[in-house]
Length: 154
Image (tube, rainbow, N blue to C red):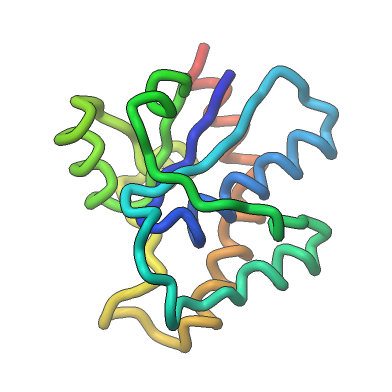
């Protein structure tokens, strides 16, 4: 199975999900699953973007320091068995560009069409706080996400 997580910049949500799932699979000796990530706008300016999730992941024993941002392409889409996104804008972008309907992370995790966002005027806390909360959310949800994804893939 090939799983591709997609967010906007391929530096926050998709990277966190990629490395949390890789960690989970490794710790549970689950083979035969390739996990990757990409972004709809992976060439964006990262000035001012919080990177607090990388030290938080490291505290959990997950080293994502070697991550390199990748732009979502037809080749990546063609190689993926399951593409998972984090907000409605990602769904719309992929539908428009590639003609695919892809699920939100929370649709798989909790069967809800709710977004996972880390920026926006409606969100509280600092950007560092939100990135740390993102790691906590994805890390703790990974076991259930994986079990639900396996069920959906049968």
